[in-house]
Amino acid sequence: MANITASMVKDLRDKTGAGMMDCKAALGETSGDMEAAIDWLRTKGLAKAAKKAGRVAAEGLIGVAVDAHAGALVEVNSETDFVARNEEFKGFVRRAAELALEAGGDAEKLLAAPVEAGGASVSDTLTALVAKIGENMSVRRAAALAVEPGVVVSYVHNAASPELGKIGVLVALKSSADAEKLTALGKQIAMHIAATAPIALSPEHVPADVAARERAIYSEQARESGKPENIIEKMVEGRMRKFYEESVLLQQVFVIDGETPVGKVVEKAAKDLGAPVEIVGFLRFAVGEGIEKADADFADEVKAMAGR
Image (cartoon, rainbow, N blue to C red; front, side, top):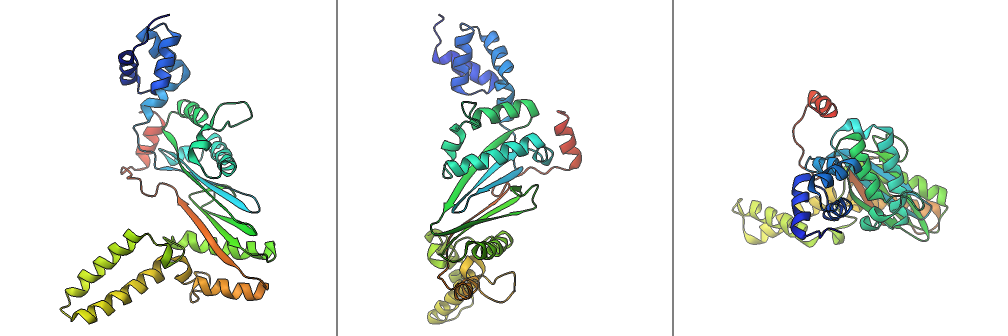
């Protein structure tokens, strides 16, 4: 058996862009023959998949899976919206969401999980899909919510199917009230979250660095007015209240009626349902948020799909 050195593995990786362990396996299978190893990787689709990995994948779908007391979201990205409409891609995202629910939203567990019993992992299945379709794809993130007693409710915006879309939301409502009525309430709150993208549940849940940054900006703006320090302090507090009203879920005005804070909507629902109701958490995923996208037009997407 040929002696496979680290430099050989690195050389093959540089030539193909394939993963370190895949390169090591390829060299082992071909007794250290570099060209044969490249062909081996190409045959497996690994070299082709790796070459696509440098491309920005900012399109794709959000997959949602729920049961009575738990739910999960997963974002799977592709380079173009053409692929996001591909039925095989949709099937992969749908299955990934189901497995994300089983994995409790743990992305590493999700990637390692077999797509079918005894079959290839999510990671390996995606690699094969990249090679087949010819476009970079990635499982970007996954997360889950659970509550007991109560319900986890989902909402998908711009839905390609009931479980797939461009924006996915989960809301966890803790309550012993009737599950069907809780679900109806949760659906409306989830729709609100899809529309307003709150950054936290309440002011106490806003990350300290975010609140500090906002306060510093408002302080600097207020000082430019030349007013006394005690007035500046009041101005800053007023702007922080406005920030929370616009940014945190319980203080936002409910989009359904346009006048009631979400927290008050929940309080009224609790009275109507005859049991306490509490929003204990929410998740909102939007495809590609935070990813720098290259400017492209329709013609560019057609060329990309044609491999040109």
